[in-house]
View 1 (cartoon, rainbow, N blue to C red):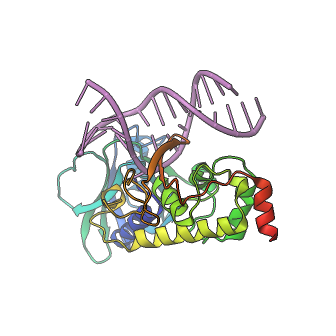
View 2 (view 1 turned 45 degrees about the vertical axis):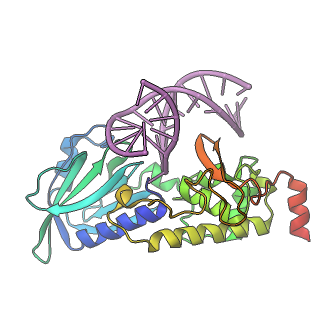
View 3 (view 1 turned 60 degrees about the vertical axis):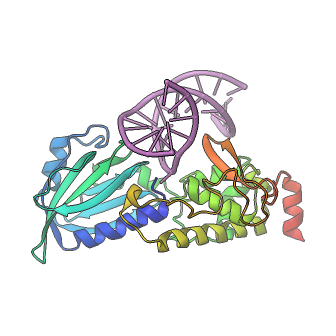
Length: 282
DNA sequence: CTCTATGTTTAATT
DNA sequence: GAATTAAACATAGA
């Protein structure tokens, strides 16, 4: 599941593992994860290349090589990167491996592991459309209520659906959206354009808090491996339990194809655009 | 066996 | 056309 904080964690780990690293060999034969790159091109293009850096936008990772090639990695629902000793055998569900030698002389093997294979690896010489289409990243670029209010005010879609749109905000997934809306006291089904400036500001604060809290957590692994332990959230995964704020039982409902948990008592539903404008003017 | 899952893309329907 | 909804992908765990 990795969402923004999990992918950020993965980026930090990859950065540490790949600092001053040269790729000795790379291999992947999984045509579902490795798309549309061919297995032959994957090994050929990466071998001998020096790693220039690792960056992240939203849920995408980008490993930059010294010849201009970039390897993009999306972890999907269950993907993660792990580091192993150079001679270690394959992991369960391993989909790709990159063997590297670092400046400090250490050799290691990075493995992309992904049970469900919903993740992707894309090799390119320029930024791919999926990367370019991403909206502002709340951590890398920051978010403020003023700029977020622009896309939200232009759509009648449910506010939760908008928060999950990667072109509106990069990296927000079902957990972050659920938590931010609970923190803001806003019903996830609220019409996006019926939010007041103050509502949007509350969502921004809720998002920041959820991201910070998730980043600060201890991580056993990276990517899906380190994601969302039980009891770490206020609303997500707590349907039927009392709302931590008002005590009413949290309810679960499908919205935009995703399971959504919220408090029916203290998360107020915004429906009127006119009322939002009136609140803004007040 | 049934249901659900942190994500995205594509097809079908309104 | 736009907007919504469902299905699909593939696997593990409750």
